[in-house]
Image (cartoon, rainbow, N blue to C red):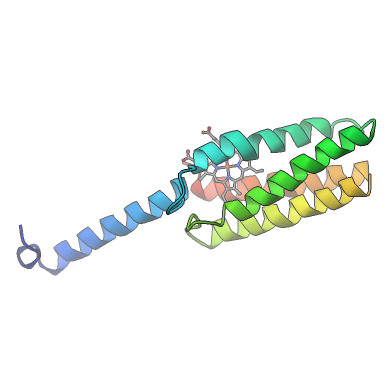
Length: 140
Ligand code: HEC
């Protein structure tokens, strides 16, 4: 069937379907790189976030434990930027959640570097809030 026969409505439907597929593809995976959002969540974001939450249940006992916490917070911070890369971001909700993930994880990291256990625990709440912010809109 030609576009002429489809008429204007047909062209619009084709355009809208194309657009919604493109949006879907961005949420699930970036435009050029192979890592899917699901893989990034399962392999990077979740393990670092769960590890940080688990470790913050008790005050770190030595320098090595603080160092491990810093690594997790820094990787979470990096994920806040990776989630914005490669055309993955579909809208303002996504962008805002990423900004909050970046800011909150940087705040946790600053407290860890100052060896402020209570401060790190408090700032960690901002990290988990950013997960929920994005998931509410984009995790199907
Ligand atoms: C900017 C958006 C965004 C942010 C921020 C975000 N996520 Fe996700 N997350 C998603 C999307 C989208 C999916 C669904 C991916 C899919 O199934 O294609 C997902 C899926 C997941 C999954 C399921 C993975 C699987 O194997 O099916 C886990 C676990 C997860 N996220 C953890 C987290 C945690 C923990 C945080 C916060 C530290 C977080 N996410 C922050 C967008 C986000």
